[in-house]
Amino acid sequence: MEPPPPPEEQMSAVTLTSDGPPPASAPRRTLIRSIVARPDGGLGLVGSKVTIGGMMKTGREQGKGSFAFLELNDGSYLDSLQVIVDSSVADPSILNPSGNPSLKAKISAVTRIRDELPFATHTFFRENRLRYVHTPIITTSDCEGAGEMFQVTTLFSDAEKLERELKENPPPSEDEIEAAKMLVKDKADIGASVSLLTSAKENLARLEERFKLKAGIAQKDGKIDYSHDFFGRQAFLTVSGQLQVETYACALGNVYTFGPTFRAEHSHTSRHLAEFWMIEPEIAFADLQVGELIGGTQREERYDVLVQRIQEAGLPLEPYEWYLDLRRYGTLKHSGFGLGFA
Image 1 (cartoon, rainbow, N blue to C red):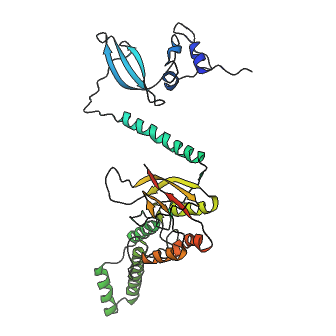
Image 2 (image 1 turned 135 degrees about the vertical axis):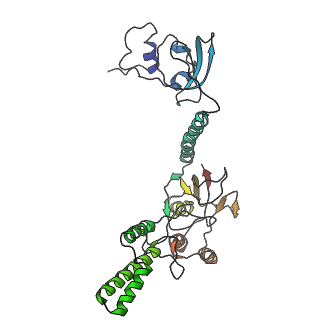
Image 3 (image 1 turned 90 degrees about the vertical axis):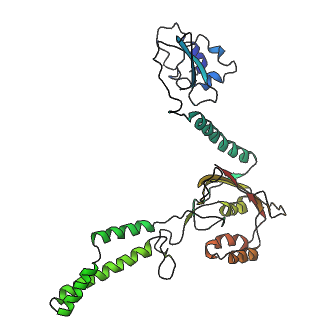
C-alpha cells in the first residue's frame, strides 16, 4: 500500500473550481504554519482550496468597504496569513480599542518563547552529556536560608475539624458556670452541676488542643508541635533543588535539575516571583578554586566546616544529616549554579 501524498499535494488537488467535497484523506483544517513557512511562501498553493482557522490580528478595508485585508493567526507560527474577505461574507463588528484592549499578541508571543526555551534547555544539556534528574518539591530542609519559605501543613485541617466540633458543642458561658457554682453551693442538684462542669472541662481541653494543632500558633513553651503534622515535622515548598542534586552529581557525574521553586518574599516587582522554574546544573570533579562567581559556586566538601556553619546559623543538624553523609562517607569536589527561569 502506497503512503498518502503530502498535505500540499492533497490540497493542490482541490481547486477553486471543484464542485465536489474534498478527499476524505485531506485535513479538515490546514495550519497557517504549513502555508506561510513553505520555502516559496505559499506560492505553490495558488489555485488550491484550503480551510484555515485563526484569530484576526489586524484588518483594513479597501475598495470603499467592498472587501478587506485580514491578518489571521492560529498560533502555529509567529507570522500571520493575509487573506482577502468580501464584504458580503459578514457584517463588520465594532471594536472599541480603549474599552476592549487585547493582550493576545503579547501572551501568544510569551507562550511561544516559553514553549521553545525548555526544549532548547533540555537539548543543550543532553548534547553536553548531563543527565536530567528530579528533585523533591516538598522538603524539610532550607537550601537558601535567605528568604521566607512556603510551609506545607495539614494542621489547619485538624484545627478546622476541632473548630466545627466546638461550634456544635460550644463551651459553657460564664453565666452557666456561675449558675453551676450556685447549684453546688445550694446542693440542690449536685449531679447536674458535676455533669455541667465535666462538659465544660472537656470543651476547654478541646479548645486547648485546637490551639496546639493550629499551625503558626505557639504552645505555652513558645514552640509549635509538628508531631501531629502529616510528615511529623516542618515541611516546606522547595526554594532550590541544589542540595538534592548534589547527591546525584556524586553518583552520576554531571547532572541538572529543572523544576518549580517557591519563594515567600514580599517583593512585588517584575524581578521577583513567588513561583518560578529553576535550572540547576551540577558538575562533578569541578574545582573552580573560587568561592562564588556570578551565582556559580564550588560546593563546600569539608565535613567539619559544614557542621560548624550549620551550628553558627542556629540550624538543627538532624534535617541535614543526609547531606552531611555525602561528606562523612567520602565525597568529591563539585560545582554548580542556579538560573531562574520564569
